[in-house]
Length: 221
Image 1: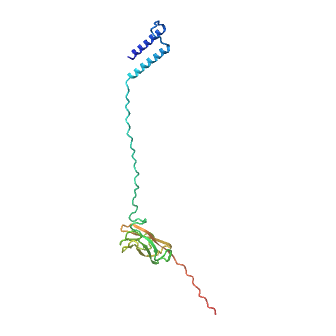
Image 2: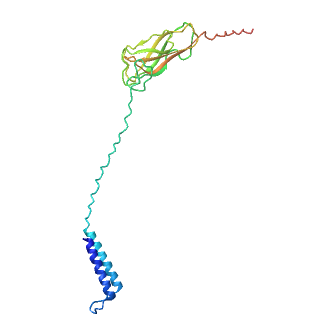
Image 3: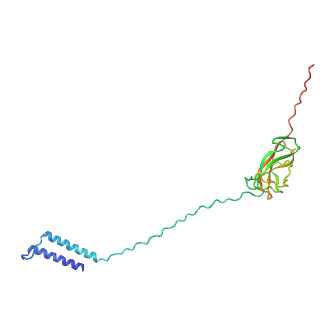
């Protein structure tokens, strides 16, 4: 159909051109070359407009919108702590229910000179600086060094927090060695867990210094 319309328009244009060139009728108007060109352009534009209107209009369907991906952030796990104290452990505890603080040596200060085989009693003054009572049955025992024949002492009374207590252990200086001899003692609860400060005895085994006799001055006559 579009081709037929275009053919008719071109035929009409050709007729007008021939009439302008050789026609003799005075009643027929004569078109100039510019008018003929203008008419041709208008006819061509009209055909293009009709063609564009006759073409079906395409309908564009919008693409579906993608659902954004949710990023889940996992919090780092909390630090997990585990108990490190084991029955019979010699590691000291800081604060807590059971605790012990050294106060002073009551007898046998450090570096006391003793002879081989000499018997003596070592006494320590300590304090309960924890929050729980020391209960009867707690044991004060050697945990390192030389016990020097000392035996464990079993607590026979409760000691409340803030109270002081004296532990006394009979000992004998060794006969097979000389020099500095040291032994460390600590208190343990009913489950054999040692706690608090470790206290020690330190003696020097050997012959004591020889006393220099003092000369008695001779009276002058």
